[in-house]
Image 1 (cartoon, helix red, strand yellow):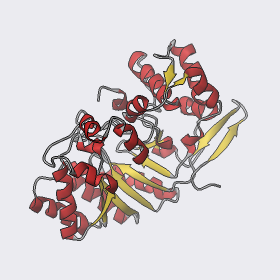
Image 2 (cartoon, one colour):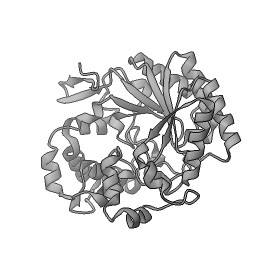
Image 3 (tube, helix red, strand yellow):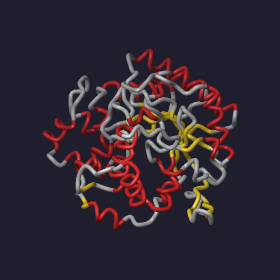
Image 4 (cartoon, helix red, strand yellow):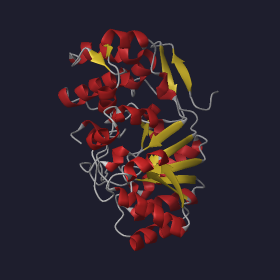
Length: 344
């Protein structure tokens, strides 16, 4: 078996393949969707509008046990912005240590930075509780919401306290540093300085997943395809739902299949074939892809696509799911968390 994929089972009664998440590689724990930023590229549509919920010790423990049960031995911690609650991060670090799970890094956008001494104190506590590396986000997307002096301040504190830094992505450092560090800078300002194609160029340099708020960004900066072309190019099922080479669990006990934001599998249903009656939408997508979901939405909910061209199948899929939740009041275990489909 390919370690980055899963087994599937064939249900002869329904003539459908059943997803079976049987093996996990390296992934992450989403501690909170609440964030200090509203980044245009955010896969999970994190923002200050989310409730300030944070993962509980019990959920963290159950999620990590589920990872280990499916042969995953390392993970990262992300959000939202996990360090809006440093004590919460420390509790997750201790839980991971208790369960023998290696934490590769904690992600941060550095918005929590106030001054050097308080930053050093937080970094020192994280290191004392077992953290070895802090992933620090460095991009024009983040700089729209976070002055760069905060990023540089957290990096300095890490150096002083002996905590390794994983700069994501370091090549943007000189471009951001060329602007006033104490101010936030919108992408429009970057385009004025570096050229009108700058946004498209950073999409080629920065790993952006086709989901969440990033879909709008991709749609604005990618060639559009007629609906029929998208359907013809994607006649098979969405097998990426089965990819487990990089995965996420969230604070509600959801496993996000294929990093497809807004879709979810209950943590407790992993490690066995997913029943079609409990996961009809995921079963449909896995077997018949975007064409199957489109036919289903048209027939069941009288869905009508909003335009004739789309950047990719994921943009169309998200539009269908938002229509189902917001216009037809569909409540589904698969379309979680529900706030993802709100005004956030």
